[in-house]
Image 1 (spheres, rainbow, N blue to C red):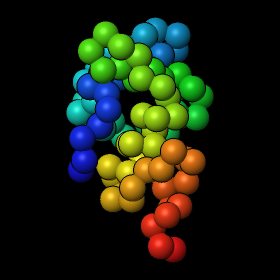
Image 2: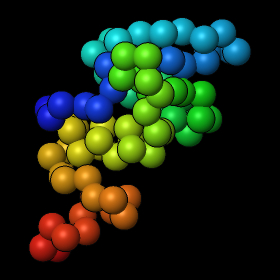
Image 3: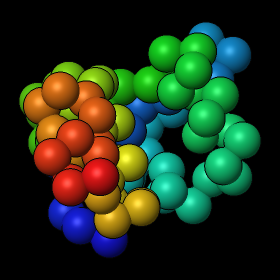
Image 4: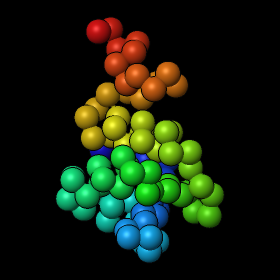
Length: 81
């Protein structure tokens, strides 16, 4: 898995903010991670700085499936496909 641009994730579960490491977030069940993402109940941080959600999600996608993330948001763009 490649390096992620964030080290901390804050999710709101029932309105209550929960802060966790990126590693801990990745150990959550897939359905729970997807729910947080689809409901936009998630923030990504690197130290004290907030990371743009779309940037963090592209990097997360690229890290789990090995595709290179691109600025267009299409991980397969430019991959010779």
